[in-house]
Length: 548
Image (cartoon, rainbow, N blue to C red; front, top):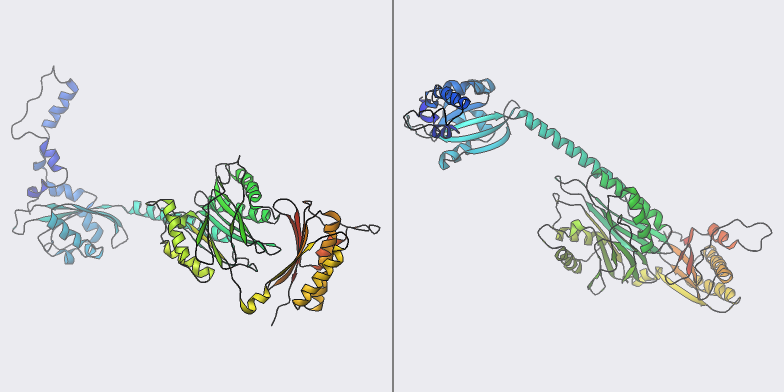
């Protein structure tokens, strides 16, 4: 085989050949126009042999990279260098590549040889693992082999990149472990089981970002506040990885602690904003905090830079809770405000993070509008609605951002089920005569609800003590409310004074101070909160016996 004929086609050879003159030697410049050192270098270069006179085969044999030459449509083997033989053994010349070079067939390189021969353009495939475990980057270059009747051939050049491939694999493995750690941390910090309010049906889902994206800090929560009220939370910590998940865990724990204070939503966010700055001044987060009160039929909420809550009413109309919205948590210097949106029986509300609606190639408002349309047609249980919204948004396993969705429904109960959810209220007018009137009212209501005698008596006693406490320490207007669900009896008294009662130890000689202590002893749970516009509500709960 005449390697000189095709050596001119090797990469770089044409550039070096073009640098030479045509045939005649070029005279060196005069000593006055070229520095002496440069003239000496040019004189040395003139003594070097030209490229065409180099023994090309000897050069290829000494190259540490693997080199092979095939020719013709069957890619018959014409040459392999010593490095190739050392890597894969002696190869029979003249045989087709599928026989002579089985290692190339195994890694799928033979179709590439056809493409190179057909297109006369070089092709490269990166980091292919060959038999024996080494990794190579293959470059296939078309060459002319005009000395043979078969004509064109392909020069195969394989550079050993095993070290690079192994380093890249170690890096990928490290990234996978870090992501798995972050996902595990993230999921462990999310609620393992959602609390189940009496009046709401809830479902939630969390989808971490795809394998190429580190997990973020999305979270959600459902918190039963007592007295039939429920807090709902959705949030998103900016950033990715373990740090974002850790900050998320701290914020979620803080929200649950602040929620137990039973504060208005905007006050909870105000406290959370200050805490976020203490955790990390460079870390910000968005959050929406909402409270549902079945007596009011509304969702009272506050938003710190989070996306608007969507509510579909019983008729299928979707409402968007746009205002008020403050800046994200951790920015400081802002007074948050609460708003409200109707959430009556038959309504469904959706809280979500930006991964559900934000796309790089579309406007955010378009994503929210698309979610509104999907919610308008989504029916069924909260989990079914949740899954349908995720599918409609095109969230897949390789989605590039975290997605958290929280769906809640206020069921419209009819038939026998509606008998398990009842309300009764009495305005407390007058002076001391309001107490016996409240006891008679509570006794009559609990009797009509067919409670057992012991629960009836406990309910009447709790109502009497709460009313007496309100008459002594509160101001008008006053109201006694009784509410039953399928799980508990709730007794609540409201008045116009915003001083919250506290449980204290009464001395033997004291004539008062035992009312709240009695209520706390006989009830399953009790609490108090300030009401919008001034005043307070004091409530207690009794668990109903389970029916068999």
